[in-house]
Amino acid sequence: MGERLIELKEVKKSYGNVFAVGGVNMHVDGGEVVGLLGDNGAGKSTLIKILSGVVRPTSGEILVRGQTVHGWNAGKSRDAGIETVFQDRALAVQQTIVRNIFMGREITTAFGLLDVAKQRSEAERLMREIGFTSKVFSPDSIVGQLSGGERQGVAIARAIYNKADLIILDEPTTALSLTETEKVFRFVRNVRESGRSILFIGHNIHHVFDIAERFVVLDRGRVALEITKAEVGSAERLIGFMEHVAHPTGANPLDQAQNEAAR
Amino acid sequence: MTDTPTPDNRSIERSWAHRFVLANRASLGTMAVFVLMMILFFIGNPAVFSDYRIYYSVLTTLPVAIFVVVPMVFLVTVGEIDLSFPAVMALGAWVFALCAQSGIDPFISLFAGVAVAVLTGAAIGFIVVYGGLSSLVATLGLSFLIRGGILIATGGKSIAMLSLKDTVAYQVLSGTIYGFPVQMIWAALFVVASVLLYNRHKFGARVHCVGDNPDSAEQMGIDTKKVRVYTFVFMGFGAGLAGIFSTMINFTWWPTTGDSYLLPTLAAVFVGGTPTWGGIGTVIGGTIGAVIVSFIQVGIVSAGLDGFYVQFFNGLIIILSLIGHRWNQIRYR
Ligand SMILES: Nc1ncnc2c1ncn2[C@@H]1O[C@H](COP(=O)(O)OP(=O)(O)OP(=O)(O)O)[C@@H](O)[C@H]1O
Ligand SMILES: [Mg+2]
Image (cartoon, rainbow over all chains, first blue to last red; front, side):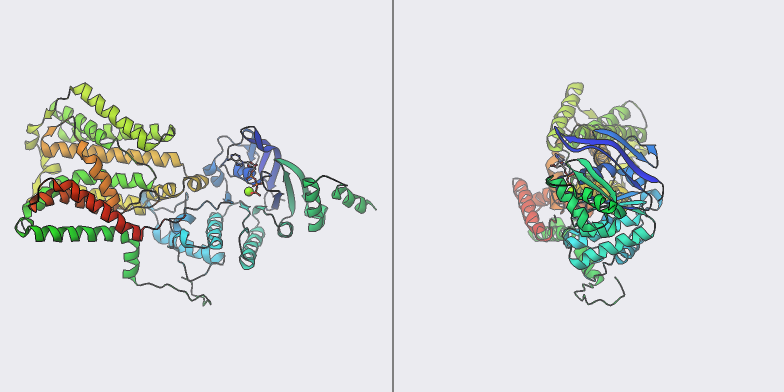
């Protein structure tokens, strides 16, 4: 396992008197794929927005490569090598694909003038890389004219451009067709093979189980479970545990799992 | 485009001309309105409109409009508006007039006037953006505040600047070469630089993104507040230039300098094809809008119509342009 890329210590975020995130400790190391699970409203998106600097935590500490950061914001997060595909995709839909891909990270020549040719060719290359080779749109197409899956492609293309050390994907496959979903997973595997880290949020536990090697389950703003793939064994067990978190009746399936292992 | 054959054959390979029209349809539409209007004027009074003097009189005052219309396109694109620019015009020009009157070189006076206008623009932007205020209401208030301050300080007295006419600065900034008003060259340079800034510069790209979706821009690490403040700074810069050029044309600074530019400027921006909702716009269109608005004044009177028709035709052009732009302005969400 690589170095400790990012770590949260006792991070809390409250909206009014509701804690969206209530004291979370978690970390992502270099080269690992972490699956973040939890019910709707568990605080997953809030947590990753804290990681990507969009939401300022009410309290707690953020460490990047072992160093406590101060004045953490979206710009610093990207500078630190963290790219995020947000649940809402964070696109500017009246702009071209090129402008969206380079939003906040424009390629410039002298005096801040845009390197239009380079941006365009890089955008073309990225779209090809993630498998969006439709002839219907070009890098100059307006994002508002694209389908939901194609827009997701633009958001992903933007996240991989900077060769980030950690890519955070917040429900990237929601609303995607099977083939598009497969493209996203192929992309995740590519990133994993290149030795970079991924934090993956999804509601399809089978998918997340396939892709991640460690799981963090959030429940009402707290970490209910942190477990590796080897420990949990199968997707069914993971589902069983998540049901237990939601309706804590009967025996904890993980205890059963440990009993079985002991036998 | 990819070279791999795909089953997807809904290809839209368009000709260069087609793409140009598509990309510039807002400004081309505005251009069409302008041409139509000029044809009507020409038919109305061929003698006047084939005489260069009418164009000369428009070109003399057009630069003033351009200096404020272009930055306003930036502001509307970023999702803001500024109603205080006429007061900033007066403020910048006042500093210019005071300096020039006290014997300071006109170039340095111009620099001082523009500097004060830029600082005022920065202050306005800071108040609106960091105060989290509605720019419509806040700049309305600031407009009264600045204009009121000028009126109190000057007691409403104007400053005559007849000595300006013999200076080198006047010749360079506002004179004529070969019968052509020099300030038009400065205005053209201003437009060219602004088009680059708007379409080909990092700042312009961010102005578009922030106006399109401030949350997305923020999520991508853009300091949206800074971008918005800088756009107000640019407005201050343009207003300063506009006020000073208007003072030079009239050889007089009035405490009411700029007042008559408020509504025509806004009209020019929207007639030019920049929509009200932010994220998109056109500097060239806004410039043509400024030309249209400037010509209506002169044109109607010269075409032999009563001056009372000016407002009526202004309104007609605005409404027809807006209806025209409805056809090509699609708001993607
Ligand atoms: N800006 C906000 N203002 C007030 N409450 C908020 C805000 N953002 C999130 N919340 C609340 O915080 C809680 C966690 O929200 P969050 O979006 O992090 O959930 P999530 O785990 O991502 O859910 P989902 O799976 O539905 O995307 C929710 O109860 C939500 O109502
Ligand atoms: Mg979410």
